Amino acid sequence: MRDPKRVAILISGRGSNMRALVEQAEVYEVALIASNKPEALGLEWARSRGLSTWELESKGIEKEAFDRQLSAALDDHSVGTIALAGFMRILSPWFIDEWRGRIVNIHPSLLPKYRGLDTHARAIAAAEPVSGCSVHLVTEELDAGEVLGQTQVPILPTDDVQSLEQRVLAEEHRLYPKVLSEFVTR
Ligand code: GRF
Image (cartoon, rainbow, N blue to C red; front, side):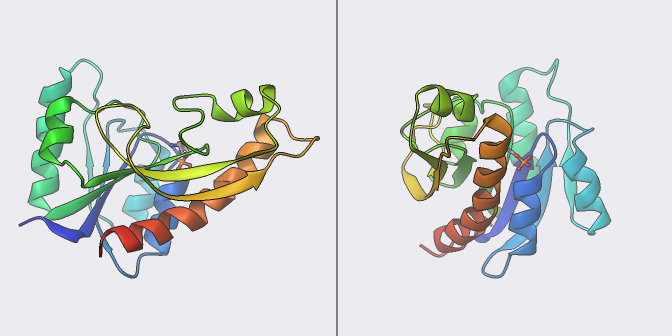
């Protein structure tokens, strides 16, 4: 049984958004931390917290075959909502259809602006006065699903990519748990 309040967090790296989601979990329960990179730093932290983890190196496995194994692991834990948090892998159309409407992601820009990578550098280069972060539904089109929540962050004349990233990341850690809490009950 897929329970919307049982959340899986998918990571590939350091997992700072994962930590924020775990530490601010009240409305939802973090049922599984899954990664396509066994060496992801966030996995160590998750294990140290006694959370259930699943990992499988995605390199060398056909995309849908990986996604079918991932999907089975999610079902083993009765997951009903999937939160991508620095998951650096495009999901297969099969997986997106199987979990349609149940996958969310955090993106470091004010979508629909700056989909894809290098968002901060692109926003600074375009002399944007403001940037921010967005939580959105995941669909087949990259970073293009319904926006569920956003926070704006001003771009200062003194900002470089690192300083802007740091301030946006701090807002991601506030926004994501809040939006996810609303999402699992909607
Ligand atoms: C964050 O900037 C997030 O917006 C993007 O990937 C980064 C992940 O960082 N999707 P972390 O692993 O959560 O620290």
